[in-house]
Length: 498
Image (tube, one colour):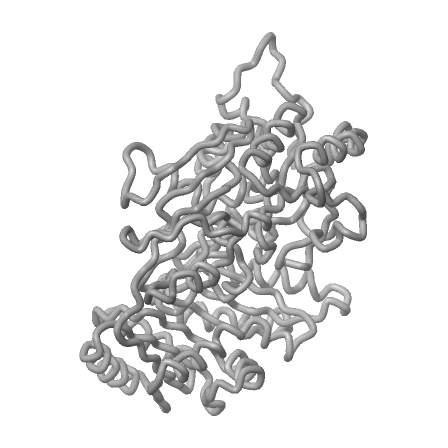
């Protein structure tokens, strides 16, 4: 496998593979265990396809009891486990390990309860993001977080990565819309956090689990908040001669106290690629495009559209067009949602980055990315959740040209360093995974990272859940004062560092 170094495989686990597979077949009978090379090939990577690794075995449980038995079995035998949802992660968070059971949750695909009175839906983790909205839209409700991959990504994966989407500016990320979960710990214990109530007592363990990237436990049930669709929603397409002017417009809109339902930005290459792919009616004579959606009572929406158009003109907008129907608004968004696949039409390969910056830093970061593009000799198409400063640069490269993948990775690392330099963070919704793992010291001190690892040790002292992800160095829990040492012997002394 190319890419970042991963934990050295456990030789004993590899020797015992046949027994492990046989035992998994007992726990999950029928077609729930996949162990041949050809069949496992479908699971060798997630959405970050530059990195690939065959798993030890793929297991697809259907019940919480089965998940509990699998984790307890692996815990007792010191076998690593990598949880996986739909595999749409763009940071390598679901990348398999050769000595790990790949625990695939796609068969947990049922909605268990729809409670309109409490505005809540209880779903299994394999239900797709869009599937929740489809289940409640007949009563005028929807689920707000809407990643571009919402047609395929699972709600369990959304919890693991704290996914966002184009409407997270006003309605929040997954963390703001999850009310409760059922999860299984590495020792097989099943616990519940939160529920249909709005808040829970004690430590915010639900908040801790949301965005934990499969390092602390395996989610087997999710309770989410649903919202009633607004009376009116209209979208504006606003074109600018430069990305800097569009960035200044974004800052002024927010500064004026206007919080759109969504506010997205695309630069020239992304505009042209999306328009060629979807034919959404985007203007092609601009270098930056804002899609601003305003929702609420009709009178309020009409008033806010006028205010936004005035602000846009003041910041140099050359075109402005408002949707006149829900169908037209959907077409405006279809181009943005298709920006990632559209990039595949203009480059053999692309590397999708994710970082978040203060809105006021957008012009500086855009200028910095242009300089880096010249430095590395690679094009970049930009798509942003502009309202909350979440950037998605698409670095265009050709993997068939020697060195171009490594060049793209170095380019991406410098973009993320720039994000941190201006007061931002390494990720907004894609997670750290393996992609950003070795950049964590750019943002956190050793004391910061050690404190985070102490949390990991409290849930998973032997580092069996998704090892090699998030943290740039694997520490023994004993080194952090969290494990009992008997007669000078550290439990699991073969735990390596990498």
